[in-house]
Amino acid sequence: MNPEKEGQRRILLFGHRGQVGWELRRTLAPLGRVYAFDYPEVDFADAAAVERVVEEVAPSVIVNAAAYTAVDRAESEPERAWQINAVAPERLARWARTRAAWLVHYSTDYVYDGNKRTPYVETDPTAPLNAYGRSKLEGDRAVAASGCPHLIFRLCWVYGMRGNNFLLTMLRLARERETLRVVSDQIGSPTWCRLIAEATALALQQVLNRPDPALWSGVYHLRCAGETSWYEFARRIVESVPEQERKCREVVPIRSEEYPAPARRPAWSVMSCEKLERAFGLVLPDWETALRLALDRE
Ligand SMILES: NC(=O)C1=CN([C@@H]2O[C@H](COP(=O)(O)OP(=O)(O)OC[C@H]3O[C@@H](n4cnc5c(N)ncnc54)[C@H](OP(=O)(O)O)[C@@H]3O)[C@@H](O)[C@H]2O)C=CC1
Ligand SMILES: Cc1cn([C@H]2C[C@H](O)[C@@H](COP(=O)(O)OP(=O)(O)O[C@H]3O[C@@H](C)C(=O)[C@@H](O)[C@H]3O)O2)c(=O)[nH]c1=O
Image 1 (cartoon, protein in one colour):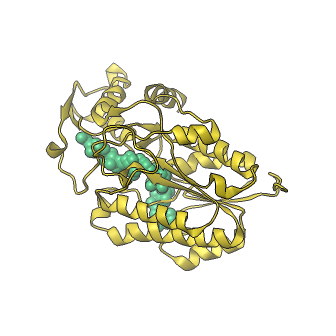
Image 2 (cartoon, protein in one colour):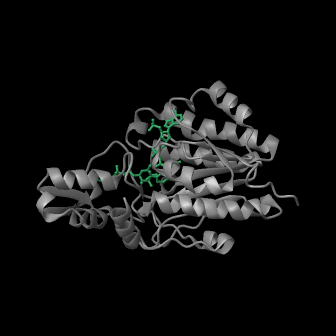
Image 3 (cartoon, rainbow, N blue to C red):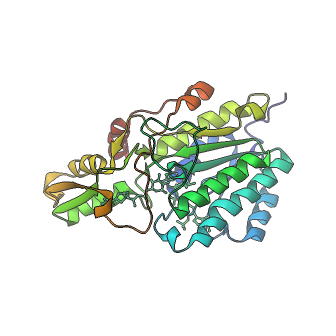
């Protein structure tokens, strides 16, 4: 084997202005030269634009953190979600296969129906409840079926201090409203985007230096340890807002039916990360520690 030197390696990153992509730009830098793109410079719905960039950069690694992530909006725009989450990754995977390039891609807990009560493993059947989940699942299938060397990280409840996410929504609402009503019957693992980007780089570094890419290619669950409800997560976030800035006095637990939304969400999003630990020796901290770190560091 003749591993490519870090200095020569060309890494093509899509979605660098998103939560995970923003962090990846930094964590991938030690692995090679990072060429970063996002919407609207490159629109995943425009096949020719994607093809042009991939041909021009000619990467040996593609990291795709771009996605259509508006879960409720996807119910009324399923075609657009499909183009971005299913069709575009398939094109990237086909290109990667012809050049033997690695493709790192992200998936979601929303590919599962949430009916289990023990942690999901990667081989469990998928059955998405909403249009976003269906489009993401098709992206996973296309990448896995393409035959390119690939890592698909299946994430859950991602937050950070940029973009749209539950943490930022709750920090804002805690300052605006006296009472917050938050669902307590959906269980998952809030995961800080910075830890995802760090784990991605560590896993990628390992596979790039190992022979036999096919052995390591596959789906890996990647999330913070522990589990909680959106309600408990909201309570911790609200508590973090200094008393003098906080308007919210009460967070009320409610059932999903009491928070009507266009998309159904799984009741159980807890995923086992044993496969990730076995393959790469990676374990993320528990969600409460990670939340404290995220709030302190940013
Ligand atoms: N957020 C979460 O809770 C979870 C996310 N994931 C997955 O993790 C990955 C990263 O998610 P996250 O960082 O939160 O996503 P973000 O929504 O923060 O970022 C996605 C990026 O993709 C870009 N994008 C949107 N539409 C297009 C398009 N047509 N062409 C090119 N780029 C586009 C967005 O641009 P713009 O902002 O301009 O639209 C944005 O910069 C995704 O695959 C997502 O499905 C999995 C589980 C949980
Ligand atoms: C704002 C708010 C939300 N909720 C509920 C709605 C929903 O069931 C839950 C989470 O709300 P959000 O809409 O922020 O989360 P949602 O967009 O469903 O988050 C998902 O995003 C995609 C991209 C993923 O892949 C998933 O892992 C997951 O993180 O909280 C309340 O109960 N009260 C509130 O005030």
